[in-house]
Amino acid sequence: MQPAAFVVSAFGDEIDDDLETQLRLLREISIGSLEFRSAWGKNVLNLSDSDVLEVVRLCQAFGISVSCIGSPIGKSAVTDPIELELANLSRIISISKSLGCRQIRIFSFYPPPEADEDQLDRLVDIAAARLERLAELASRHDVVLLLENEKGIIGDSPQRCFALMRRVGSPYLRFLWDPANFVQVKAAPLMRDGWPPLAEYVSYIHIKDAHLSDGTVCAAGEGDGQLPELLIALIEQGYQGVLALEPHLASAGPRGGFSGPEGMRYAVKKLRELLRSVGGLEQAAGSG
Image (cartoon, rainbow, N blue to C red):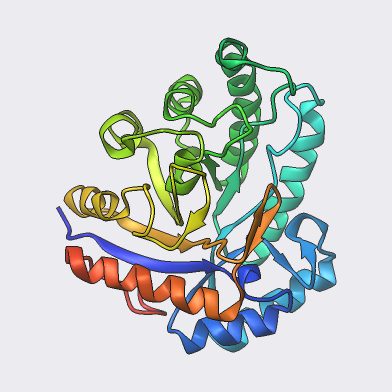
């Protein structure tokens, strides 16, 4: 088994709305990968073709690759026609190909506002059938969808996320582990109860942490997301992949968060400290 190697990426729009400002800071702090969610105040789904060409130009100019498209696919009601999300995904796939990226982050749909735990469990099969449609489209274009856990959607708890992944069972749908989002739904102890069933599906990691007491977001290692234990588990399984910083240190909401330049610098510092403390190897920017 190869030793684990981590590529550190970051959500550029946590730094600034302006893409050039995002990329300039990422290069300054030796991060060679961008998780691309928005630029110039526009979500990736709303970018024009000329906007996409400018993204390509700037990324090439700064020597920064796109590790994942942070799409909003699946942040829609589970009762909405799936054809709307298939059309949106088709557009995102087109953008991903322009950016030389095969990975697209998605979600597992909003339940009705009044849904309780039993209703959420019953909605898993419906959500999974919709995810199957999305994964089938992804398979035709050889891109990989990354299903992220998040509070307020059907795939919020480790148990429902596992049920979704097992039900779909497609190599074109993998799992994106976000420890802070699990903490915010009171999944604890996370690595003991949540990690074992999902580990085989995990292909991507978001790095942010949160406090169980009130759900507030914090830098890696400062909350209850068990980031050191997560990194150790990834090292033990020889993980070769991305750690994408999504710090949310200044603000957080259902459509994204913000940290500002200094918040991102601090988040990077804390992650690198954690990596060193557990013997994790960060792959150099631009390598591999």
